[in-house]
Image 1: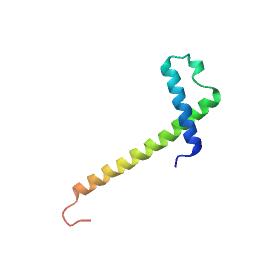
Image 2: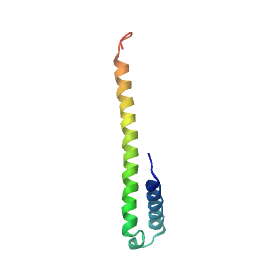
Image 3: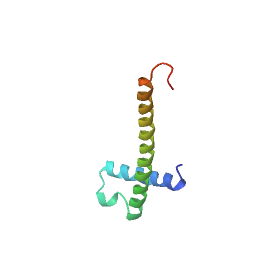
Image 4: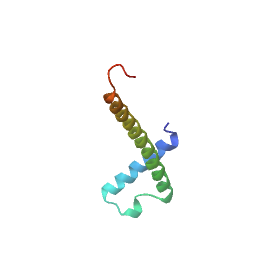
Length: 74
């Protein structure tokens, strides 16, 4: 579940990316506190991506097992 803190972290990370894209000097992209929030946003996105990849991998595994079954096997 994505929390309110996660949503705040995503907002900070979005501002970080916008500042970087505008060409501002790196020392103006984020404060130390912002960097902590950006790390939290990254960690949350990584967890989401890992969950999706795990679910997709499980589906591929089950599809492979089912393709090797003989008629009538369960």
